[in-house]
Length: 508
Image (tube, rainbow, N blue to C red):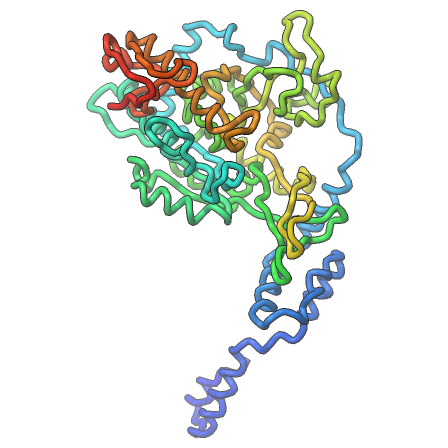
């Protein structure tokens, strides 16, 4: 390409320079787009998506430019492959499933006190050595809870008024302190757990601002890394892109299974390796009782020598709408099937020896992985073109319309695992999801709040404390700050012989 500045340097006249400058301005200013770029139209025709330009003539120049850039940002061959493979997989027979063998699960009843103490110390030592990283899945908004903020900003109504983000941050602070106190054999040195927080394009800015405005809840700013999960276009049942406006595609996050690819593309897997991280704790934001960086679970995981692990709770009743762990195929790997994939007879089948449901181990999105395994999964799922299709109401230029979101789930990784360890926890101690607005039948802020208050009340009483209350105790209780105790330990000095009036927060 001719360089006008070189022409001037080589002796062009002033008038020539002026003319050249005018020509340069015309070249660098984008010409008005009277029609979509022809090459782009041809590409879209190859994939049957040329309808995205149906209202081109009605768009302003800025809207036309926005639409073209939106389309050009897509990896069309990959997205087309995902759409075709995912639609084709619908209705195909799936491999038979089998119940998880009983001896594959570490049950609460089967663990000894010696086991728990050994795993607790092993986990704290690993944390002290800086080998554990924590990944938070936090891409969702709280729209089902009546807020437009990231779900982690939600306050479920505890006496402290703390948000989900703050509760989880303070649990990390507590574990860091415990690891330094229990493992340190000299002057206490700081222990740091790096926290990787996955957002989405819809929550990223608000999440970062929330943490910054709350001074990272006492954590160091440089021990937190934010990264975004990807998005994919929403499609009709025929596989056509849905337009949110006449000049933009309707898009949605690619599911919590997008965490693997997002960690890889943001180079955070390399960051973990550079920090000496060997193990990764991964969980969802909406469980108010999550034991972030649980040393006992970490110690168990290391002791088992597995590539992946999951905490499980027993299914409450046959029709409970939760995914369950199964073996996929005769003697195949562990994976998760959604409740909709189990017919009624399978969901209700009883193991005659144990008296439990045959398919009883619920997936509650509390996972542990080796970093090596996450690297393998990030590559494997990147090549996997079959995504789950979720039928949802999609915002479109014609109002909400029924369409499909393309998603990968975090439990898709288990199919790649050479070994997966399952670790039972009690629902009333570690699982209180916040998904639906108060007044719904389950998983509400109120049900989660009561679960926390009841658990912490048991801790206080076990530590020698007393409670008074002006409403029935089943409807109230006390909240123990995570800065005081991680899982009910070390409360005697605070609680023994003292009386607390419920509801209240017990803090340092």
